[in-house]
Length: 286
Ligand code: HH2
Image 1 (tube, rainbow, N blue to C red):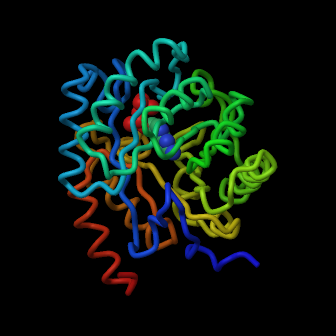
Image 2: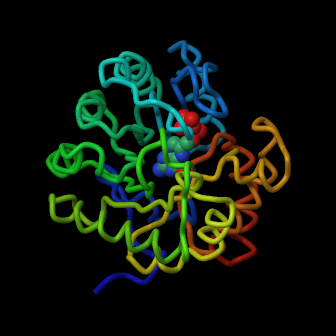
């Protein structure tokens, strides 16, 4: 029998990271020239490592390192270039923060393999194993943890004409199919997390519908991760520029937490720790 929605364990390495915490904060470190909010800021490995240490000090439970932007309209980066950016940063972050779980944001098995060799614990795949058939078998073989994120199509074209009649139900149905694919390839149930992919081929109303009703996703029995940090949905609702979207981000993430999400991919760790700690107390979820 499946555990009740929202109470599932998430095993990363030898630990259940959700065992004694109401929520987990995944701090974002983008080693890219073109990410929508922090592109170019941490391209230098030293700056990226300093940012990782800063986010850990602010209370990140794990870090997500990415070297390929997935903003709408972006082109894919060859694996060799992705690893050239990511490799040195991952190695230095692993050395500087030996205990902290590290996730690598990639769709490519080649990059994921090298990252796991260099000490990463989690693969965060925005394509949920669709873009590279080698990714799910690799994760299974290595016993890594895995985030399966929902996206229709690819970043280059995903915002061209997104259409949903019922985003929560459709996203859950499409992720259920990816969850089955991961299980079929041998990824262990307790290693898996699901993510509705806020901003990935969705209109503002679709993003709001997903954040408002996570129940179809939670019914799949795995913990849910949400990443609305600084995204265009906040800009569309408020007119705020990318650097000024923290208040809107916090509102969306608190709502998602109260709706059952347990993991949050964020650029601003300290502010989220304060907001979600208060929300957890309010909801009796400490
Ligand atoms: N969003 C982005 C990248 N990776 N992974 C998951 N699981 N969920 C998300 O919502 C998600 C993600 C996009 O944000 P960012 O990394 O800040 O920008 P860019 O893709 O431009 O590098």
